[in-house]
Amino acid sequence: MSTSARMLRLLSLLQTHRYWPGGELADRLEVSPRTLRRDIDRLRELGYPVDAARGVTGGYQLQVGTTLPPLLLEDDEAVAIAVGLRTAAAGAVAGVEETSLQALTKLISLMPPRLRRRMDALTSQTIPAPSHAPPIDAATLTTLAQGCRDSEAVRFGYTARESDPTRRHVEPHRLVSMGRRWYLVGYDRDRQDWRSFRVDRASDVALTGARFRQRELPAEDALAFVRSGFRQIPRRHDVRVRFACDAATVDAVVGRWGDLVESEGSTVLTMQADDLFWPLAVLASVDAEFTVEEPEELREAVRRTASRFAAAGERPRATN
Image (cartoon, rainbow, N blue to C red; front, top):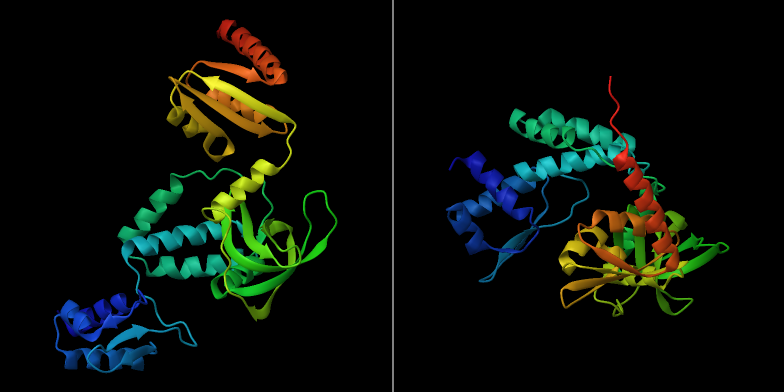
């Protein structure tokens, strides 16, 4: 292995940010400990902050520095970053469109043709669904992410559903992306309880500098906590439908928006909805016989829709 190739391999290993015992790292590179020390010194000269621990259990670890040194990316990593930057440049997160486009331009200019073709194939054959969700302020998202990572409390203004604006003092736990929206799961110090907050409804987010010890979340994980909150929101309709199929067939359509119970060859779906559009779409999409057990409004909507579809299917085709 040439010196240049060995240096690139060493940098790739160190960029995992794990602690590497010196002997293991030397074995990976098939060099002596002395050669490894020289290679580490060369990386330091290039601006990579590599920490070293001496002794029998000594080793090396790449630390965070004051500037961003050049990154070494695997092929799949480079393609993934490019696709992500293209999505961000399209406005998924407000405030980063121009910066994302600049970074994307730099990355594409350095890509070998084979990687550029992979990225172009993925993006050209993918049609993103239009999103009606409000864009998220990039500074808000990154500040909350930093608070979650560093266990640092945050303060922000918040306007809950059909409520007046309030100020919140929160111990942030995790950010959850779900249904084209971002949610912050955290412990509200003023209300002394866990809450989930829609990030697009937060304003003037600021770190307080006060660190805290993470509390035990009253759920399996942050995603489960957000989902449980959805189920507690009052809805106009309580829906119950029995399908003549297994639960997996229904789950493929309903996903997280309903609860399923399978027994004796059938599956019962229960869900809540403010209107009947989504339940009707589910019934039309599941390829199985079903019985609407409640509410009566959904049974009536099914009858009207079935009549309309049947009439459309009987109309003669237009001829030229």
